[in-house]
Amino acid sequence: MIQDIAPHHFHNEFAMPQPRPQDTLLCFDGDAVLLCRNKAEIVFPSCAEGNLPPETLRYLFVIDDQRFFLYCGEGKPQIAGYAYDASGFREATPSHLAFAGATATQLARWYREHRFCGCCGNLMQHSETERALTCSCGNIVYPKIAPAVIIAVTDGDRLLLTRYAGRPYRRWALVAGYCEVGETVEDTVRREVMEEVGLVVDGLVYYKSQPWPFTDSLLLGFFCRAQGGLSLHPDGNELAEAQWFSRDEIPVGQNHISLTQEMIECFRDRKDPYQK
Image (cartoon, rainbow, N blue to C red; front, side, top):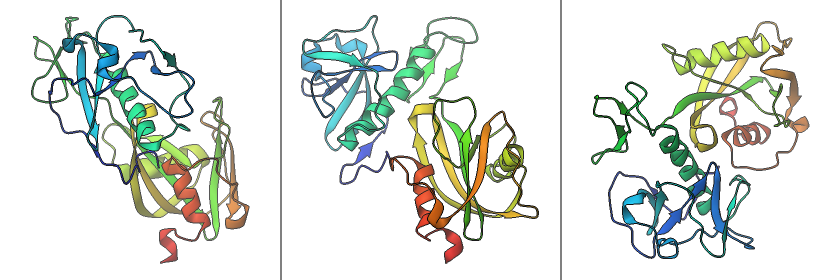
């Protein structure tokens, strides 16, 4: 998955170090990031190349001994040999820099969307003790992380796959949805499956989680078993299509960066929890 960057190590403990010339600089124009032109792999500029005022740079995280800083000043810096690229990081290499870029995109979006206080309209300030934005009125805003579930619904040797309605993404996927207020993640699993395909499920088994910076989400993966009637009734709003696939009929995925695809492959290879 995208966060699996071994042998590299990601550390995001809060700190306020001063940028060094060799540290990595991330500059954004919306979700487009400044990258080196004509490079097959990701190359970010250094702080020395950016030559920006230190007070405009915000420390993000470190991978191994490589520190990453975000430009939080006005406008969009221009650096010779670099250009803003909006192609994203899903298929980019090397993988540890793709993860760094995707995570930085999430943080940059949060900083950009919370410049002003939602309570009084004043300019927000960066906390000096934690990753948060604060206001003189007492309002504190933390990075947006929305919990969501990824659900592998099974029926013996069959797996339920779906296609979204009204979205550019047209590949087969698992049932998924966001947690609602006052709801446990287990209740979210049951509700989303019933709402999207009309099935009752039980035997929930937690698989693993994944930070998903593209939608500011924390994904929680579950396997479960369909009960009772097994006919499918896609809601037509979230889903355009739903279909049962036997293990050898499951379409081959295009990448392995997502929890969804890992869970599909886990079922295909008979490594799902019901095989134990």
